[in-house]
Image 1: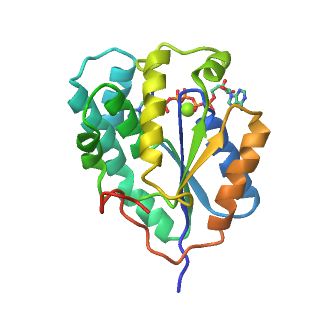
Image 2: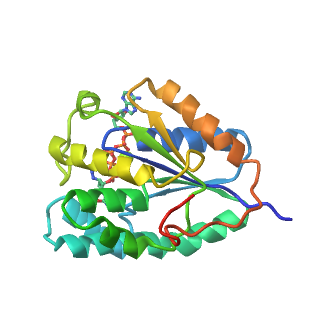
Length: 215
Ligand code: Z5A
Ligand code: MG
């Protein structure tokens, strides 16, 4: 049976080092000769992504539900590409995904189930590596920037919701990594989790949240 690539998502709070770690993982996979493609959500380069970018930089206002649906649409517009790459044997590494979508919108007060629904049936990651960091540690990394949501109170709420989301997954598909350490130490843990998946998988890609609970 032909083997497919893995779908690996790195999630986490602001300044937890997601972009640093996806880049390091991509380089490591390339060194090992494993075909890899990186995605980042929001993907601000698409038409939908442009609207999201403008909202995040407070250059436009949108209803909370409208922006939530745009974040989801931004994933759906790339879902087929992700699935095709994975089925051709490429490992896809993704910087944020639907879990950020749910966590940030639910932190604004939207119901969790409503937040989840537009992302139901997206390709499900084979593993989600959640980079956990305290707001205090995150602040040490240069403080919060200018964008919407980059406020400590918001980040605390988001962290609590990520905890709730993680409890729905088993330990094999959701791994929490202490991201308050040195870059290299975090990268070692990321690699430990990613490596076993990169020798090729035979199981089909699952669909996110289709049964209500992911296992
Ligand atoms: N959002 C949403 O609401 N709904 C959705 O569906 C999605 C997203 C997908 C923009 O996301 C906002 O969109 C985000 C969630 C919301 N709002 N917030 N907050 P984004 O992904 O575009 O945000 P970003 O600015 O790229 O990521 P980030 O979270 O701020 O940073 P990061 O990628 O986690 O960290 P980093 O860029 O790798 O590192 C940050 C700094 O720390 C940098 O100077 C590094 O050199 C340094 N760093 C990294 N690792 C370490 C360690 N281990 N030690 C010390 N310093 C470190
Ligand atoms: Mg980033």
